Length: 301
Image (cartoon, rainbow, N blue to C red; front, side):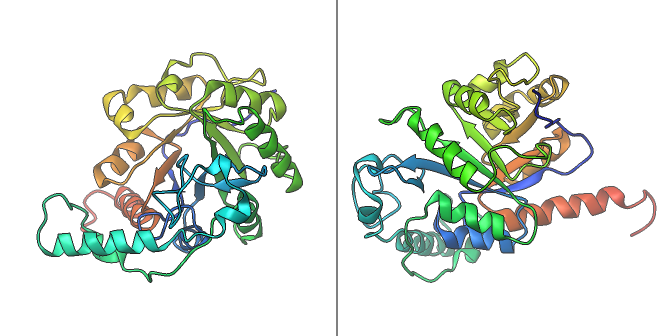
C-alpha cells in the first residue's frame, strides 16, 4: 500500500513550527503551539517520550533539567511528578539575557528579531501528546502534527505502540487522505519508522538525519519511509537529495530552518516541509517571495 506524499516543485514549503513557536515561547508548551497556530503555521512539530507510568509527553531532552524548574530523567518520573515543575520561566530569563546582550552589541547575538522575544515570565505545565492532539483536531483549519519518537530509550518499541494507540483514540491512525495528513510520524531510528509503517501503513513517515539520504527505493507498506528528513546543514552540502527523493516519490522535510538564506534555499529546491522556530517571520518571507515571483517583469511595481 502506497502513501501519497510526492515532493513538489513550484509551491512554497509548508511552514512547520518546531516545538511550537519556540523562538518566542518556551518549547513544547501549550503557549508555544497556540502562538504558532495564531501566526498561521501550516504544521506543528513535537518530540514525544514515555513517562514512568506510560504517558506520552512532549519533551525533547532525556532529562527535564534544561527546560524546567526540576531535575531528573523523564522515563523515571510519573506524569504527576512532572506536573509539579514549571516549564516556562527559563525561556523568559534566557530571552531577557539575549535582549540585554543584543543591546550591548554582543556579536554572538546575531538575531535581528531579538526584540520580539519579550514575553511574560509565567509558569507552564508539561504538555501531554493527548493535549496537543486535541489542540490540532479542534483547530478550525486543517493542520499537520509532526511527531518525532526519540531513541534509544529504556522503553524501546513500546513508544511506537503507545503512540499508535493514542492516534487510534483520535481516529488518526488510518487517514482517509494521506496526501493531506493530520499526523506525520518521524524518527532518526530506522527501526522506529519500520514499526510505524508496519502497524499503520497509511500514516506518512519521515526518516530523519543522515540515514535518509541513502534511501533509494520508492515508498511502500513494507516499512520504508515516505519522506526524507535532512538537517539544513546536510541540505546546504547536498542540495541534490531533494530532487533524488522527488524522483523516488518521496517528499522532503528539512530542519531547523531559521536563517533567511536557508529559507530561500528550501523554497528554491522544492522542499515540502520546512521546520522553523520562527513561523511568523518565515511565512512572511515566503509570502513576500511569492508576491515577487508573481509580479510581471518590467511592470514597475
